[in-house]
Each structure stands twice: as structure tokens, then as C-alpha cells.
Image (cartoon, rainbow, N blue to C red; front, side):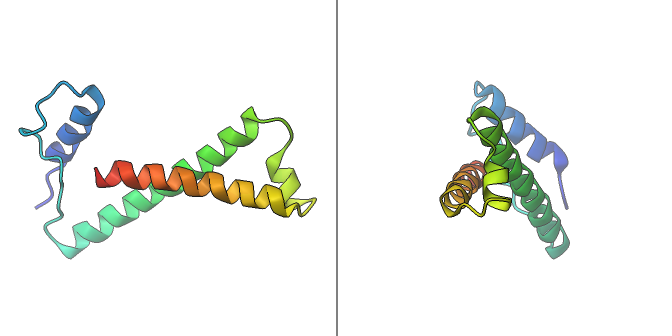
Length: 99
């Protein structure tokens, strides 16, 4: 059975960090295949959105237009930089999801 209250309590505990970690269910495990697939889909969407947001934020706060350099000018160095940004954000998101 899926218990959203446990997942929400664990998430809130990570945010405020003063709650005793032993009392929180920090590792949520799905009870069925359907819940496992649902959690994978949710975490996949979160990861994709976070990766795109990281790329767009990097593009906004650096001089020039990284997206234009990659798409229109076919700049390979800019594409490698963009891939490194997405990979870095993905590693951070994966580490946060694993715990």
C-alpha cells in the first residue's frame, strides 16, 4: 500500500533538517509493481525538468546564448558545455533522490 504521508514526512524532514532522522521513513519502497513504475515516472519527470531548468539557468546567467551557439552555429564546444551542465544537474538530482 502506498503511504504518501510517509513520503511527505521524509521530504519535509530533509528540508527542515531538525527532525530526528531515525524516526523518519527516509527510504521509501513501493509495495507493488504499479507503485514502482509510478515512482520511476515521477522521478524521471522531476529529473528531466530539473536538468532543463539547470541548463536554462546557466544559459541565462552566462554571457552569450548557449542554445543559439549549439543549434544555429553548430558549436561543438558549446554542445559539450551544455552536456556537462545537464550531466552535472542530473548527478545532483540522482544523489538527492537516492538519499
